[in-house]
Image 1: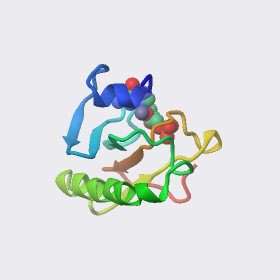
Image 2: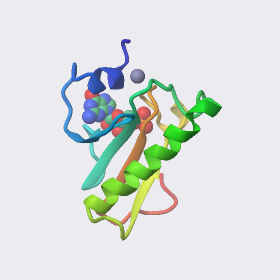
Image 3: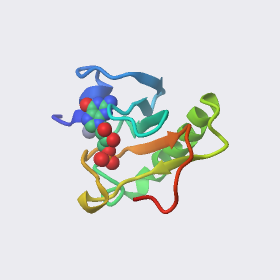
Image 4: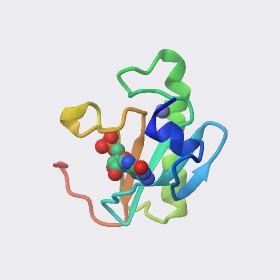
Length: 112
Ligand code: 5GP
Ligand code: ZN
């Protein structure tokens, strides 16, 4: 499939891998916005949260647990943020579900 993140999972496009298991893949965002900015993605191609099905509930939960594990490993548990940008109006630019994990600096609220 000609999807950027599917190609990253397959190793056809290089990435800085942080973690991988049977169902998920984690890599450094190419345009990091914080000392930690990684993307947690399902190996299954899901377009976005709007397109997700009931059967995807488990993997969506897993993305959050993997984010918590990476945050623990990076020692950023004092304050981090997990984000799905949903739709172009919120800045979504890649249409393979991805959870942003940002941390390692103070994070303003509300976000821009
Ligand atoms: P979105 O804007 O869809 O929420 O997030 C997409 C993210 O993917 C952006 O933060 C962008 O920097 C990142 N990104 C886009 N292309 C690549 C790439 O080829 N490699 C990596 N590592 N990150 C990418
Ligand atoms: Zn994909």
